[in-house]
Image (tube, rainbow, N blue to C red; front, side):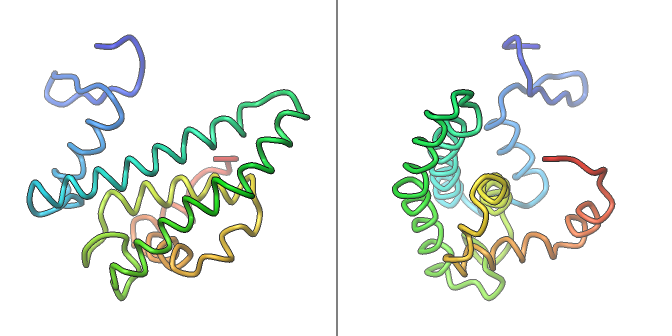
Length: 160
């Protein structure tokens, strides 16, 4: 482990550590990145917003004290979720992709990141996504991808 922790991706005996670098490497390798440096920077900015949301979600999901957790949940529902869901709703709506992608005309790794974080929102904040039809359209588009649809159908039962 180059940095003493996971994730680590090993390719041809070489290690690549860190979720962001692995994410970008695989996105470029499998055609899920932008077509130039500026588009990749725009995708990175979307991932940055996802990471900002993750910080807030971690506070909620890992809080053990029930009173503090209730306070965090209220702040999530009143401030953080409307802020971040609003950002993604506008982003997807203004992208004007018929399929509902967040950036460009094809699925990108940003769509997978958005899908991932909003899966956690559904777990802890039931029904919250119903107010955001473009985010829901993006989720449906990701779930309709053949390999994703197959995995969702066949995967082992899990909370995650």
